[in-house]
Image (cartoon, rainbow, N blue to C red; front, side):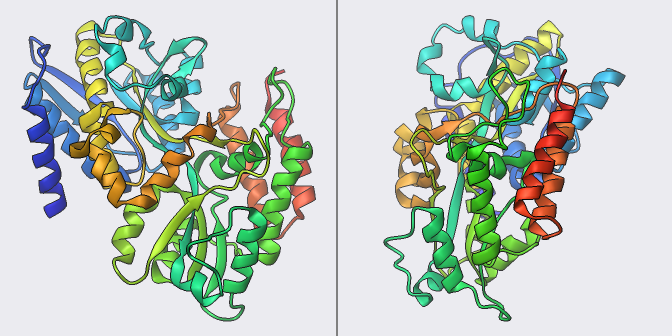
Length: 423
């Protein structure tokens, strides 16, 4: 509770230091849709209170949050049919394309063009590009992440590893995991979260090898070529030599927090939750996701905020809310409560926002240092784009539970995805 009170105090002190004009003239209700309440419920509630204090003629009403990005986009698609869309929606970076292709999202380009001081509001061009499609701006990033490697330093030292010289390649990581792993015991080497939303870590493996999901014209599968095969070999080695098991990520998180999992490959977004669960029982450190080849990339994860309302009065209020949530105050609140990093550059430059926070929390810096290697989280085209995600997940599951070989699983995955692409 103390953290929430101090967060709101910070918000208030920042807000009233210089609230700009522009509050909506008459009472306006904005219906806002968000997801992943375990990470974001308190963040959104704090931001809504602070925003309404600044704009008292706007009321923020939240819909019941959805559990993940897949559920979030499916609900929006249903609401589009029944004409019950929220005014503002937070969507996974890889799900924006669906709303753009179906003309549900509102183009934010005119709103940006009307801003007199946009260049000084902290929206970096590279980070803005994550919300762009067909030359238009469809969203502003809210919470961003990159894949990172978590190390239990106690288990690393017990296995003879050096906490100050952690491995930077999959070969080194898997070799260390093999030393940590205790077959038949309660200590396990590593876990790669293959089932994370949107096939995010599978994309990360492929992209890190310089590969892509589809050919440039988006007509053919590309992840079954040499670069995708190299990515699959990495996953196969984790299963064969790294002590990786067929378990869900909640179980992996429990194992890591309990001190029985040595290496956990996941998103930086979990740092806040891990800190809370571990407390002072042992020290952990994050390291970068390996990039084996020059030109390799990792996909940016996280979510962005989109405008859906077509009502002009609501659009004005929605734009102020979107800027607030993604601006310095919203970004600071979000980062302090989670492990995500902001899509706004101002907080990290100010000691009273996130400058000192990053100095005192080096585990959060790993993702920031990977920004030079970030690329988009790929969204498959066409009406079957969401089905493709499930097909890939099903084949990854078959590989992890060893009901198929990595080679056959990759071939089946590629053929199944090819059949779902637009003709």
